Image (cartoon, rainbow, N blue to C red; front, side, top):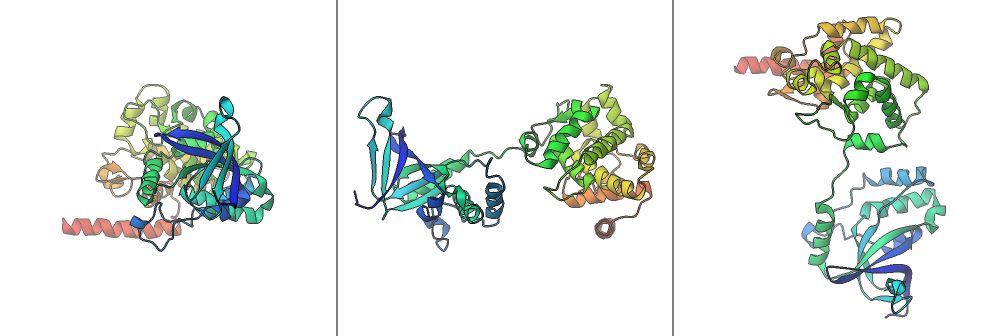
Length: 369
């Protein structure tokens, strides 16, 4: 072993017949200790994807803005150089606990966690006192490029990102998530017919909307930037609005009264999908702004709108593409245009632009036909 080493408290384990170590590393050492593959190398000569620098500031802000609450999962690294583990005891439970020494001349390559490493470096510029806190690092002896590439593939192949709905359900830091959970509890239709975990609803589900769709729609209605402070008035206003919308939608009430199945409504109507929820919120926000004292009465006009998916002349190219619901932002705005026109309200600048494009596309289809 070389005379100059890094030394860490560590636990030794075995996977696939090979020893590995879990070490506690101070955050201030992370930028100096771990390096990326050379970004100038072609992909087949690297052991990880290129760093997406656009992701780093968000992670760094998360750490810096939540110094009492942040949590970081382990980094995974390969050490190409001398490794030595000295256990605290020769046998018994402490034989796997000890000191891990890594030669200072060794190359330590991150196999998983390069964005966390870059974010830690950035966050420490704002919160240097966090440097003495630690992150766990899973350390493997380097067994060559092919093994490192396989490690990256194995670590990421089964990774599944949580759904947006469950993110809203579990996020107690985001003001909008907190507000939306309370709105869902206060609006009877939402409380009983919201899918709280998934972002898609199965054909046989009894649920009508997803929590993520209600989140997006409520954010549109309130109209405040992400992360902005939300007030009790915002919550009360949202509850009143969605209760009024539910009252103006007889088909939704039929689901609430169990006279029609939610699955049948989703099959046959546009208004049983998140795109309509978001479009109603966009149009509703403008309606409230123009008629603050009488918006709920004017909202009743939703009853007269033909939401049937069979009404292809109205919805094809807006809510539907080839008969299938399309939730792209452009389609949301085009659906909100129909609602605004139904309310007798002017379109937004964006709405007018997309409406012109939609009209031109429809004309071309007719000519080609």
